[in-house]
Image (cartoon, rainbow, N blue to C red; front, side, top):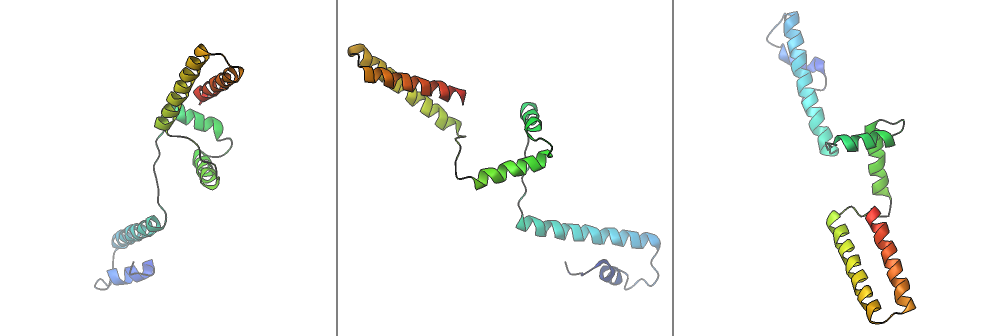
Length: 140
């Protein structure tokens, strides 16, 4: 913005008008603040990116329950910062989860076939562990 303050802008705006009316001054101030806000927002957007999130009713209710005494915005900031700062990565990819679930099912089938040909105590233990894993996996 080429003006340092509103007074500089008003001086430039009324160079050719020696006696501006009150309405002219109000309109000139509005124009200055429009320019100032436009400049400020552009500068802020260059440094800080903003995102808009939309939630359905169910997710919004979950947010309200978990936020505690904080506002939803502050809670979301805290969750995002926590996710960015933790070293653990969570599995959120549904395609990956379904692929893992299919592989577990295939392992169960192979082990059941092996058990049908010859029973081994180690294979039974392995089958039980894989079935427990599948049960836990379904809870995700």
